Image (tube, rainbow, N blue to C red; front, side, top):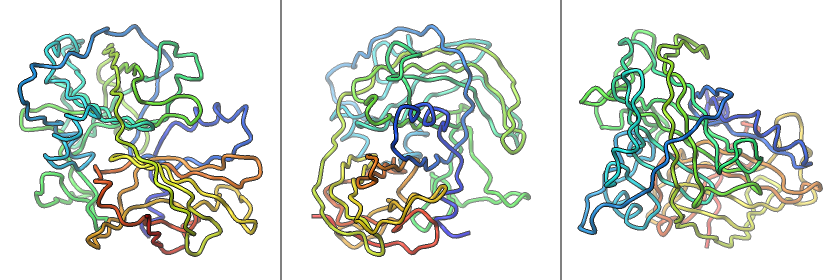
Length: 373
């Protein structure tokens, strides 16, 4: 399978929310799917109220935890910088951390690390006391929303989550272990997952995307409720093991470190020009303008160029940076379009020389490069 076909085949974000969002809009939008499964329940619950209190002013060596460190492939230096700048919160560092630890049915869940920008939030939770079989994939059913009214349109967010499996995609597009150990392939031909840490705990990580025009992640209140813990016995099925209530209210950071860069350069082999990009260390929004010769929308193909990765100033190419996101036209004439993607790692914006993109979303094209100023 070609890289682009694999990317477009990944499971993903809540299409129901996008459909509801588009009821009153003529914009054409396509969802590029997040790579993990998430079960959604219908109810919204009372939450644990708590305040984020930073520990003493003395220097702290920040550690994002196993899940966030692996999911965003962040270096120790990046973790220190983004936490000190306020773009990340490490909950075990907080003086009132115990108030965030919720125990039910013999299982304790607590937030571990949050990293945000304007558009994306990455949230990890530590789960203690939940055990599954050796060859079982742990899973959970949960709800989440922004703000104080779960029925308000401004509360809607897109997202996906899973228990962290210790696996990453390396720069060649291959599956590898985040800890650097040699990947082990099981009898079924799949890489063996490492769900549990050295202490026998699990971590659950959620990647969330705000909805343009409705809300922003910065400074918002995020409500998360775990309703059920279980396993995926196969395909998209879910089997419940433990039903309970683990409720959280999390005040998201107010710092994004996002930059707007004016580009005004054509995308090779396409009918689009990149007018500008909004880029942070953890996500990007590419703003396009289409020419008059733009191909019409056909079924699930919009023709919008797809961001995939970066070229760095030292010549290094990183073609597999893009994670979940969305694409769409911003006006009825289909003149202006955007491509929004979260990253699978933390990026040093100052080292970016260019973007790597597919010229369209058909899956039948070669990757192209566009330099940015």
